Length: 272
Image (cartoon, helix red, strand yellow):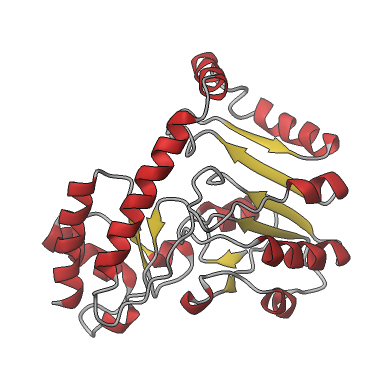
């Protein structure tokens, strides 16, 4: 599991009877994992690779070439790939949304692509997702869902149909707004001395490395986020939750004025 990762991936692995192995990445590489790092982390027991592009929490995206190199490595070693592409509609030019769906078509027994409507249609509470995978895997998933949530509730299904058949104009509008807010946020964060932040190509998060601002009193991301909450009245998520304690996660899924006021307040705490 390349780190930073979405918080649920390690626990999902444990629940499935596996052992999560985080593979660290760095801000200077846009938090993107390399084939060399994956090979170094691989063991005889490695069975699955989880990819997430655009990423939560970093917002960074793999290029087509980077993704193909990783997939070629995985296919050659018999490693199953789960590609989480939930933010694929929120990608900002010149970045592009490189999908694994083509690899699923060539290797259906080794690839599963998961996605949903939560991010692209602002339906985060509706719990509508889907998976493209081999029929045998879908059958196994259905057995688990049948004994847990049973099904997606009817009104959420109707909402999903309306979203998918109503056109993607609203998605384009959101994408434009998010890109503007991304640019506003990056302009502010780039002025914070000692803070490094890759320019995300997608999603709606910034994941700056603030470790240069740690002190004896504020030695980690959790302590810093607590201080920011108390002093700036802004809620952020510590990077430790995502497997990288050097960083903190911002969401810019708010209006422009609120975003700028929040960043100003956070900046005073971090650089003060």
